[in-house]
Amino acid sequence: MILSITPEAVVQRQLDAYNARDADAWLATYAEDARQFEYPATLLTSGTAQMRERIADRFREPNLHARLIHRTVVGQVVIDHEEVTRTFPEGTGKIELVAIYEVHDGKIATARFISGMKTLDSETRRLTA
Image (tube, rainbow, N blue to C red; front, side, top):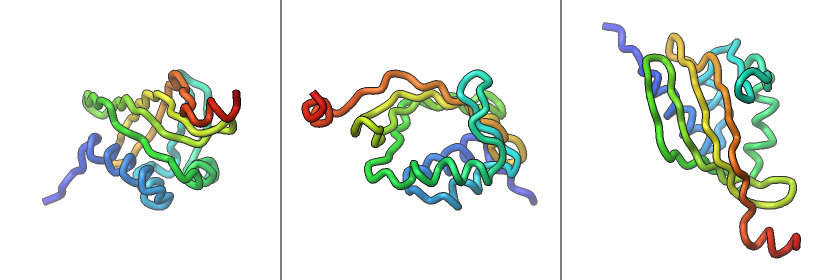
């Protein structure tokens, strides 16, 4: 009997690996030729080698954490609404993000990201004012 992993389970593994800052586990959820886009079609990365390079700096951020606000699953598409805590060039804060994942054969084939409002922490705002 062959067990198939659901698209939702693949995306949850990706989110867990992201929050653990585990690049190998994170990349294992993506197809080798996966592509990431700034919504709708601005290419950010193509293939896991470029993805590894792009995520390396992000995973060095000490406060990095994505909090899932809501998830919608329709067939092979998983849409996550998240609040991501980050260290931006201008200081620490949060950004609202919508991620649209297309999952095929148990791997993320494409990911599109819509970035929302960035909010700096009050301490960062105080220090930069």
